[in-house]
Length: 321
Ligand SMILES: O=C([O-])C(=O)C[C@H](O)[C@@H](O)C(=O)[O-]
Image (cartoon, rainbow, N blue to C red; front, top):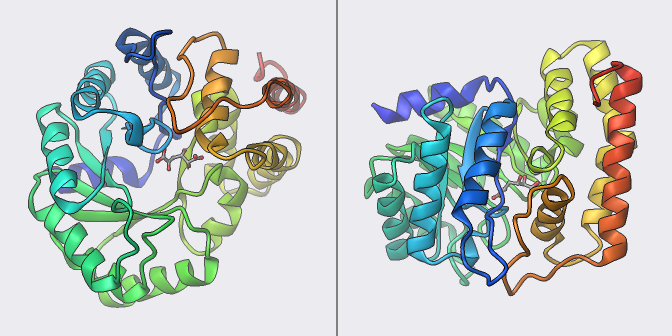
């Protein structure tokens, strides 16, 4: 059954969870070859899973046909080495349609994005996610952010539903998250998965680990895999030395990156894409309604990546090369 296998493959990840950007050609069309190169590079660099066409992958900007082509390409490039999870969203009917497209493309699971536009009540949210899960053979991870904020009781209900294997938090309310983890632990047997899914989740990694959430998404892995991998190793070591390196990377790289990423609307995606281009892979610009980051911010990003690498080189000579 897929559900056990995706959950078990994600439970103790061997590397960062990779959320690739989607590549476009100069005329704005999908650039599948470059997308393939990006995904292949991430898998070969040590990603533990590929989350294709999610927030960083501009799910919102893709047609259903482009979505399916990208997911199929991610599946081919991953070649069974790591699982592929695809975004699925909008209203329930369209989310189900995306789920079917992802299924046909060979994905292993879905990241359920917040439903489009409306701010729904808990009862409707439960129906939305459970109907999505019931309509697909793929395992579903529910993504809390923006207009989809769930109470602990709702997450308990979702954790009991067939096919819903995890919960990704992009909200960052630690009180709510702690209550959610506690409620599910008390009421639902089994290992429900939690993901720290805040933008640049590494920043809050130690805080989330304190409440039992050790899985996290990494946008930095898209453009500085060496830094993201060093962080991942140090974080998962769980030793005083590992935590000390985590803190050095937070102080010298992740915190300033988070602050830079907060300077523009949509930078959560566009700055990451700029980072991939800085690394030499021309993944093109973001599609509207997002816009490109200011030149001075891209320059600052290049400096930060250098700074992060210097930190690695001084900590573990050779590691930043
Ligand atoms: O949907 C998405 O792309 C994400 O939530 C993953 C990102 O890596 C997120 O953690 C971020 O933007 O740093």
